[in-house]
Image (cartoon, rainbow, N blue to C red; front, side, top):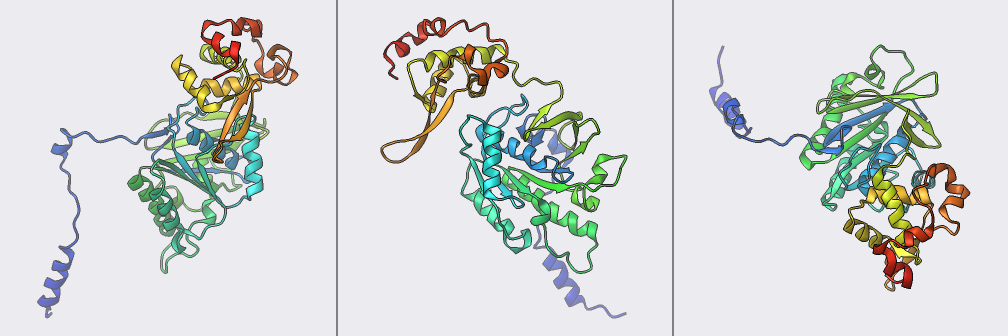
Length: 369
């Protein structure tokens, strides 16, 4: 057989232009490599995550609640979050429905200020990926991308001669690469099928190619008693199944009382009742004063909800919006709307007791900030 050595040498030289980084095991002993950063402690890290569940069983409610917590830097189920901006592709929703859901999730709290929504988008292979990359480029504090649902964003046609597994694995690998290179969490929301499986992760619609590239897979499984189990499988952390219940759009943990207050939250109630006793105060100022006495935002937000404090959108002379908080017209212990939520607030005997706290005397006596 005659060999065309000219072509062979040209092919080898062409391959030599491709460079890869080789790391020896010996060098690893002396180098520090960062571990995947948590976005939600013990639940989500930088990288690719998949959340799957039956249709209309609360997947979007759960992901929207987590997105809000991340955008505000608030705890989610008592888990710490790393605050940052969120891009949410709500491809099966409309603006009015998302607004209504945020209102239900936030209650009296103001709308989150660090979530951007996209309701219509080209698919990943038709310009959708570039849209996400452009958003990350213009948002230096980008923390998470949610694609709800993946079937509306994934490639419309598989490459020729590719089987389903390979095509789906290639598409999700692109999103994993994006997450790792840009140091963000990417979440793909998917459906599960109706077949019964011994392994809940086998119920995710499509082939296993959908999940092979994911760093974390989550599956919602509804149970006959009305509760739902969240199963998690991750390369980055271990997680036990979580028992939850969906009530009015809000997911809560079975056996977890979100109205049970810690000592910090009790202190936040006292702080707000005293600090706001002289009238409305800007939200930013409230957070700043709370920080001075080591009362954080999470505790203040929960106290706001328990007391029923109203947040009113106001504007500066230049038209810049901000929120002002004020106490409800009815005292806490007599307010029917908060009686159930606050349960035992015997530690607050009266407004007078709070107002007489030394650190609040000045504010309550003159009503000025």
